[in-house]
Length: 145
Image (cartoon, rainbow, N blue to C red):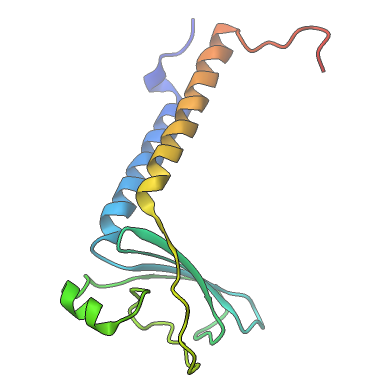
């Protein structure tokens, strides 16, 4: 007798990831969150930032701080008029300033909502595979590789 879906680890892990994605998307409209990584002895810091409902990935050639993985969750955004008056295509809070005189090209952001359908498609495929496996529908033929 197959276990019901509500007792499946695949089901509950998918629910938790879905909740985390929605919470990150909502939070990114109110706050800015950084994950930065500075390798030991390197001069380039790699940064992933969640803000304005998008994922921004960039690197900074003038790192600040110690080597390792760092996390920062910023205060609520300023009013939109203040952000637009800065004139930057990247809504950073100034934690990682660029000291070069040349303007930095705009950084393309990946909308966080695009991760929701991708997760739902993968999760549905895993649940379908679970269903087929339990019913015995994915057994390969005896002569197959």
